[in-house]
Length: 387
Ligand SMILES: *Cc1c(COP(=O)(O)O)cnc(C)c1O
Image (cartoon, rainbow, N blue to C red; front, side, top):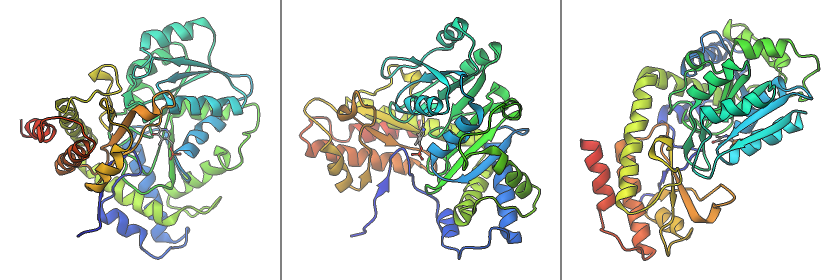
């Protein structure tokens, strides 16, 4: 029996063989001409993926939380007011981080499975002068997608910097930094960009860079300080050697390979693929009689699906699904952690992965004693895919 299983969690995700092969190369010098070219191309492709031609991309060894820190540390000064537009777990994390850097943080929350609307953000921003706001594009703890375009437009009207945590969206959901007026956005290698974990990625738009240049106080974090990273990123993009801290050379190479595949697929086609596969999976989930965490279908992300366990079933479902060959994730949101599970479907995901996932989920549900029409989930997804 083959010892492989399909990883369908909201990060890390499966990677293409060419991406994994890049990791197996012998480590190179970080100033070798071939590596400088790879780093430079990766930076250029990040501009495309974030659609921010006049922004500054950063590629730094670390996880998505470091990418959040790359924005929080550089764009916060003590005494600033920040609005955290929160849809779950990762909003709280951004709030904690901004507080750590001295900001006065206000959270704008929604009920679990909901998202603050642009009108609610507008009302909150009208109450006092804010310097910046943060939005989690897709909150991985709820599967909710926020209206980044609408909220960024409101932020612009109030002259507030708009920072987007796109860790669970960039490379799967549409994110148009320039077109929507997003000032800075971030992601990590292991989610919809389909590279193993280890790289923090961020893009600062022109207004974020001006705000950084206008700082009156030094950046409190040493490793995240843009003044140390900017010369390095600019040098690599100009195909010159530079050093501040050793880049994760193999991961940068893997990222460059994956970004080449992403750009070749095209962002529009990639977003459409995520939507189509997500719709099919969600049709299967509904056909099995299971409820999702997002309160309305239009709030549901296309990169993951958050599903409540049916009555009589608990987290012991997940090892049963794993025994059938598909790895799913448990709950993360603290208020409902034991009541739901999550299916990631981002990056390299294909129709066959959706069908395999529903098949394994049905096997697990049957083993857990849940009564349903065997095959109904797979059939609904297949109908959606063939339609
Ligand atoms: C995964 C995730 C993070 C944190 O990334 P790490 O790589 O785990 O540090 C932050 N925000 C969102 C929306 C995420 O999905």
